Picture 1 (tube, helix red, strand yellow):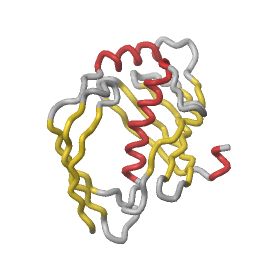
Picture 2 (cartoon, rainbow, N blue to C red):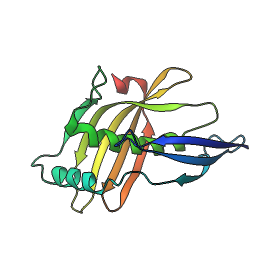
Picture 3 (cartoon, rainbow, N blue to C red):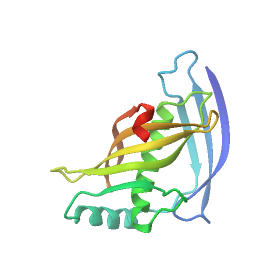
Picture 4 (cartoon, rainbow, N blue to C red):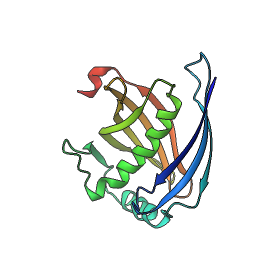
Length: 172
């Protein structure tokens, strides 16, 4: 396959003034589009600790009387309300996994919008969200509907338990 050596600067999404340097090696497997690229990376420095914000969000969602339901994040003008910012960040992290798993040398995906998100009731301590998202394929300008089920707990991180590309009409 093809191997790429990258040097980049990562901006902390919670603290725009904070950056860390990152070096990475990405290996795309020849001929097999069903295998995610191998990624090895090293960070120089630390990103801002999110424990406090994570715990505030977790408590807020756990204390809701009804499961959270929302749509069109960001809205058509690019705005994300402060109370939806953690839902947006969670989708952004989870979509990163989906993008990595579905990347080839000829794709450049980006999360465009959460069309719909619904919290799923659970009996354990995890939060579960069912997302319908739109991925923007930057090279072809295609907008691709995608479904992903995301588990999250502040102490255990994010896990995408299920994801699938959706037919085009699902985004309407």
